[in-house]
Length: 116
Length: 144
Image (cartoon, rainbow over all chains, first blue to last red; front, side, top):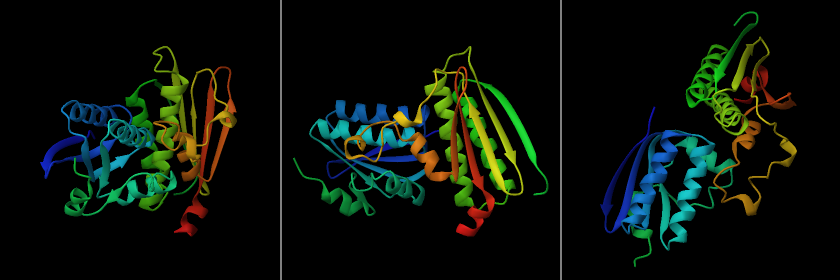
């Protein structure tokens, strides 16, 4: 049920591998805390790998948006990687698909970040 | 599925209740023979309605309850979620698709409910709000 987040560094980009559910309560809070933690450590180039996220609700979508704006407001960037069909469809109907920079290949996604 | 089946829960204002209501909706939609995509949509809409009731309606108040009723007929699934909060006027909700609201961190629940169900009705209670969510089984099947 709950969400797991593993972080790793690739060429100076922080990749957050998320799995499970991002919903009101557990998943949303975990995501918020993890992004806040990364920003606190100075990691502002974040690639959110959602390939193993099985479910996301409106709260989870809201958390993605909040993470995006928080990172942007601190001069960083947050991109999405490997959307499942469900998450892709949700971002489409909420018109957020064009707000986020969505990638489906990790190497090119990492390369797409502006270097400090 | 023959005949009509109905079940009603009265639950405390908690996330456990949200999960239980969502699970019940998923089981109901599966028993009704919906395809996986439609099962997911019904379950998510019902989850969003339950979240609204628990979070925005009852504000997690331990003294307040939510009521969830599920009715399955040959033609449709009808789910009613009621809270004991101060009431919700759907006309006053901001449009989450408006450019000025796109980057808001909340406010998409009712929109998703309306997107995923065939009919959504609001009824003011005293106190509280009741949402009725309807999925027409014929529509769902013919749309696939």
